Length: 65
Image (cartoon, rainbow, N blue to C red; front, side, top):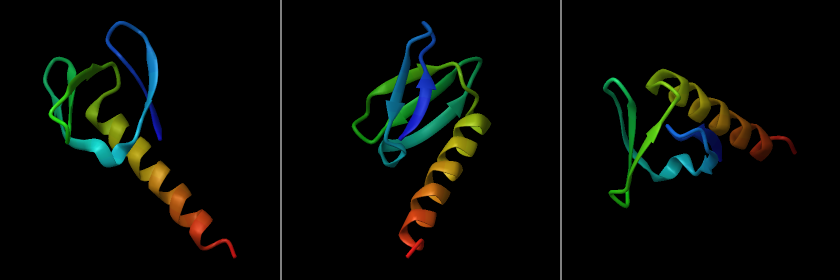
């Protein structure tokens, strides 16, 4: 899961597999596969980095043994 912050300042965790699209308008708009839309404080680039780090962590754990 990645940690994001809503526009109002509430922190939450999101499964990045649910992300359909990220748009950088004045605000960052995250559209989920469920069609729910969430406005967040993080930029699209920051979210991308969080997703890459999350997936690296998952793959690293798979190949530890």
